[in-house]
Amino acid sequence: MSWPSHGSNPQYLYKAMGLALPKEFIDFSANINPLGPPPSLKEKWVDFFREIHVYPDPFAIKLTDMISKAEQTERDTILIGNGGAELITLLGRMLARKRVLLVEPTFSEYEEVCRVNQCEIVYHQLIEPDFTLNLSDLRSSLEDVDALFLCNPNNPTGIHYPPSTMISIIEECEKRDCLVILDEAFFDFLIEYESVVPYINKFSNLIIIRSLTKMFAIPGIRLGYLVAQPAIVSELSKLQSHWSTNTIALLAGELCLQNEAFIKETQEYIDCERKRLFSFFYHNNYIASSSDVNFYLLQDPHLQDQFTLFEFLLHQGIIPRHTFNFPGLDGRWLRFAIKGHEENNQLMEVLAKWRNQHSSS
Image 1: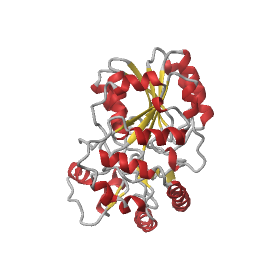
Image 2: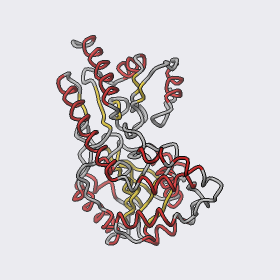
Image 3: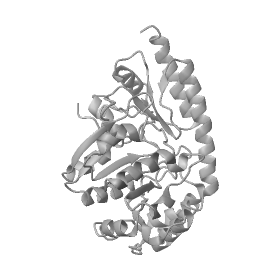
Image 4: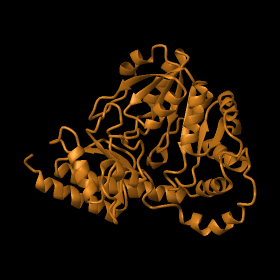
């Protein structure tokens, strides 16, 4: 079966399964803030419309300055992009025909971009269900590697690895002249996040990717940024198309970065819902990954793989993200976003129904 490579756009998933898309469904496959975009974004939308006749600033000066101030780093260490996806694409071009290490399970787009650019790909597999990441296990996989992709908090597990782990890996990679590409697309869902951006000044091999589409629920706009030493930013900017980020995205980004109260509200909401869900999973004999953010892996331990549960959920209008094309997971888990309170209630009702029907299987 040809599985869709991303979450969201459920019509393609149902088509692949040979099923009709139900009239009512809840899409748990996209890891977007369940609170939706900040209210101020809607309030300013008409003002944004007045700017669409103006070409966007190709250097995104205002947004770059805001990020520079927030992250306490220099402007020339920042590159604005059309979502994290564009920045990953630029990195793939920069790494063309290089040897790249992927720590699996991870975001599928790293491998797709590397393959398009004829990279040699090697893998380091984290062992479920704990998905422990440490330098001693990783060291042998770093032999003759030009770049390492790390996702932290990890997608799809939701597990966050501490700065001490990241720094030890970055230091080891620096000794080997290996780039560390640290994708922090979900960092702002962490209640107590310790930034590694200050280490940009210490390590010339460190590249950090950030997304604004997840926290601020604006995936239709596409906006992200990258932080690295100026030489890397300059090299990547030469590979970027002119005006890659549109005016609306830049204005939305400027507004979103002023919403600190919205970020805190989201973090507290997600934390509360996650605890509620995980308590249900524990008491109903489901296994969940030790997520710290707004999504998690889930499995029914009675099943060899999760296909029958996956199919059952789709028939109930509950759409998780499959893991059939995540190397090393191979369908043994399903990934769910944390949605709104009532939507999470419906998920628990359906999972309770499944458990009642399969309690002895």
